[in-house]
Every structure is written in structure tokens, then in C-alpha cells.
Length: 159
Image 1: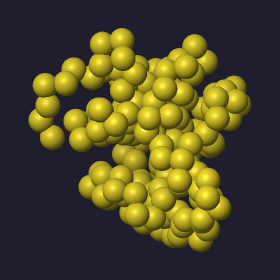
Image 2 (image 1 turned 30 degrees about the vertical axis):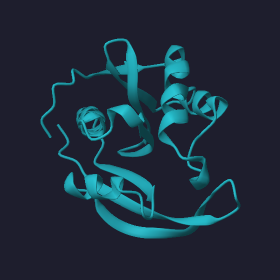
Image 3 (image 1 turned 90 degrees about the vertical axis):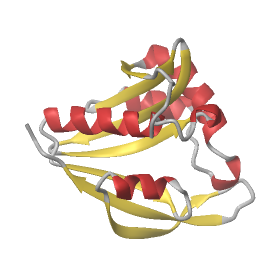
């Protein structure tokens, strides 16, 4: 998708958690129970093999991706784009950087899961992710309603 929006994707760390939480609060509807707390994000970032990418428009956080690698597999734990930056290529830029970084690090397979019904599933499919399963009742929303998760994987061209 062509856009005039200048987005840069940068490696992030603990100092970027306030910006991550701004994006998290804006991007995730609480009815689905998908958002993480700052403590959960910090806990993952403190683990070996975890990494954060932050997308910015100038100094403004547009979105982020949080990933974890174990051996030759990686998992996209979270990806979020703030509402005002949606449909402008931000998620695609974050995913392209994540895929490139993972492949350069020798990751052979990238996994992710997404709530059934989330329109992001079409983006993943368009980027070559293949659905491999479903986790019934994986997400629990604020009201107690449960939602299934679709699991995907993508084989990477390892450098």
C-alpha cells in the first residue's frame, strides 16, 4: 500500500516500554483480552532470545512487534499498530523487519497466533503465513467471553 507516511522501524528495549504501552492501549480492544501489561512485556524482554521492534513516525510511536527465538524457531508474541496509523503499511513494515532479522539470525520458522475474526489474519496469509491450527477458547475478554486463536507459521529463507 502506497503512503506518504514516513515510518522507521528500530530495535527497541526496556526504555521503549512507555511507547509500547501507548500503542498497546490504543491498538487492543479490551473486549478481546489480547493486550499485555507492562510487567508482562518487561518480563519477556528480560529473557534471552526476545527482541522488540518499534515503528515510529517522527518521535511518535506508531506500533511495535515483540518476538522470541528459541533454537531455530521464533514466535511473534505481539504486534500492534495504533489506530491512526492503521492501513498505512506499519504492520507490514514491522513484519518485514521481523522476518528479515529472524532469517539473518538463522531462524527457519516463524510462528504466530491471532484471534479468530481479527482482520490481521489476511495480512499474515498475504505474507506467506499458513494456518496450522486453532486454539479453542484461547482469549478471554473483559466480559468473560472467550475467543478462539488461529495458529500460523511461515518458513523463512535462512541466510
